[in-house]
Image (tube, rainbow, N blue to C red):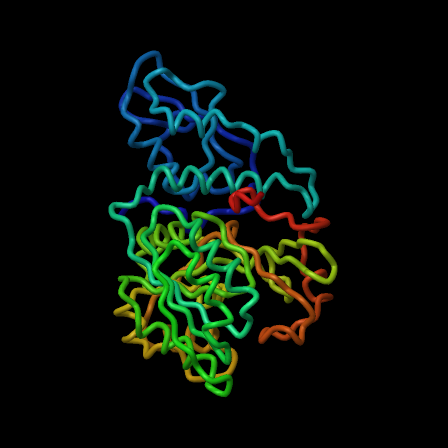
Length: 358
């Protein structure tokens, strides 16, 4: 089985160990690497041998999400790998024993960058992005984020929910991606609007998109990467970063309100609804989105699980949910709830570095 980051530990318990060449392969303190045993480590510090050696074992560790670093890179190491290994900025953040330190976040960002290098996409995925909207003012910004997506071939399927096309014509016609749309009456259940849009799909994959959230440029590619290495039927991210618009603050959560852990890189029945990716064939097998006015994502995931689909939750570092007053959202939670579950809190818009936000 190919190595995967499934089981990645956000908060390491031990300091880095030494990764070295042991004559027949890479080793940690003289022993062949055991990924499960390495999970509690902050990472591995590489010691290069005198001459070139195979890098397969090292790349397997990167594919498993193990943070790797080196003070220098040997001349025979490929430039893209060398650049990542010698970028030691994440090590400058040290754990201070509190939940609010940035060390764990920077470490996970470094791990994701290594995963991307070690899990190259065999082919460019054909993705049909499905978005239903009642808010024409949000369409332009949403389409601009879709245009930023890298390493995928995307089309947009727009469900205009009580919105006339003339209200979004300028945004649609200025978009460089292929855009198809349907106009649905405001009385049509939200799930039906999504299904009508999804029926126009030409891609192998469907990706749900929310009109008011933020997505990093590798969002779709990372979802496809996770779908592939996890052997999953449905994939999505953690709902981890939130921008609380009335407070002009960003929070990050890594636990549920109950205090239970909310990890990434796990098989689970819960992913962020605005990040669901599924093959078009599996979507049809599940029966599409439920014809409901709300709770569409939750009920879709329930139906997927009942149909025997494997659901996988990957990292949420390339996604930020926007939250206004609770009445503005189908997910009815007050802003105080998000402040309560926050492990990090910042003034202004402060996403993960993987968002590549200006």
